[in-house]
Amino acid sequence: MVESVEPLSYHRSVLGHVRRVDQRAWEALLPGAGDQPGLDDALLRHTYRLDEVGHPGLHAAGRRAATALGIDVPIEYYQGNGSAPPNAMLVHQLGKAVILFEGPLLERLDDGELAAICGHELAHRLLWTLDDGAYLAVDRLLDAAAGDARTPAQYLETRRRWVMASELFADRGALAACGDLRTTVRALLKTQTGLASVDPEAYLRQADELDLSTGSRGTSHPEGVARAWALKNWLAGEDVEILLTGPLDVDAVDVLDAALLRELSMDFAAQIAQTEGLRTDTVATFAAGFADPPGPLGVPGGAVARFDEPLAVRPVDGAPMPRPRSLTPATKQYLCYLLLDLATADPETGDAGLIASMAIARKAGLTPYDDLADDELGWSDKRRAQLTAAAKALP
Image 1: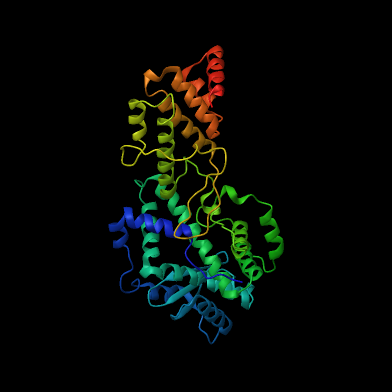
Image 2 (image 1 turned 120 degrees about the vertical axis):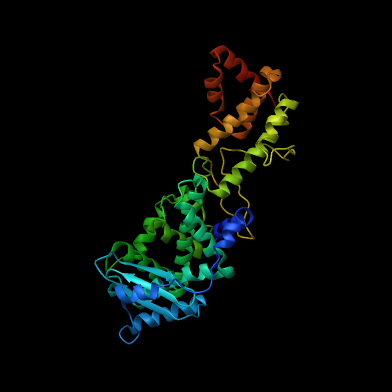
């Protein structure tokens, strides 16, 4: 059974972040009155309008999709000129929905596939009109940021994940419109490959051969096989947003992961600062710098987190518990340097601080730590062996 089409947890999380951090910019990009001037004229001049008299099947498929998604505005269809690859896109206007087809796509689709394609494009409109255009404003803000050379990398990564999340949302709209997974995948395949005959079952088996927990490598659309996998697993009630996020990577964070890493660093620093052998005012002062804003740190309860295991991430807005995320080698290295910085922050801690840090690294599963500390501090083999033995003797 097809679930209702709701914004992904990623959409809601980014919207919440933007409202808190960039409220003025976001509000300035909320939809205003009226459509884009000159757009209708451009469509009439440079495309072929697909009226219902000449294309009744297309209009019937569009009505089917609109009904499934609860969209009640006029829908117009146009065919672009030239020899472009098969494609369809929504031309967003406030008072109506406009779907533009390119290439020889229409002639390759049956009625169910047409409904899926229309559903995909109309789902973009659905997302952009939810919450009085809140998601459209985020889309505009991230798109504008991507065109500015001064934009921090975490916003560029946010935009990449955001547009991919929007494609997954639109794919769910396609599935809701036609009501069948295989029909949806068939429409996706025909659009991507240009083939007139495809095997959706084979494509779904192909998707099962991949490990998609590492995330999509797409720049605007997830790979087609990943989109098929996401639809199949969404129907099964599985969390598929790992496709957007992948492992927690300090070298490729979005705005949400940046906040997560700040929180993780703060908690880990607090654990370190409260460890016997490192519990000094100087270490506590350095550890407090990982708070945002810097300040006194509380002591996290429980044991030190294991960083060699997938990290549990809190759900968003009542969404299902997401899959735990693994940490990339770069993120583990960052945590090792954090630990080493605090272990050497106070010269008064001496060997006791180094031994305590090595014990923490073992408890946290940070296996690269000893080698990294050795490289940075230049231990002799004898000294390293002594420190290692002392760390293993700690409880």
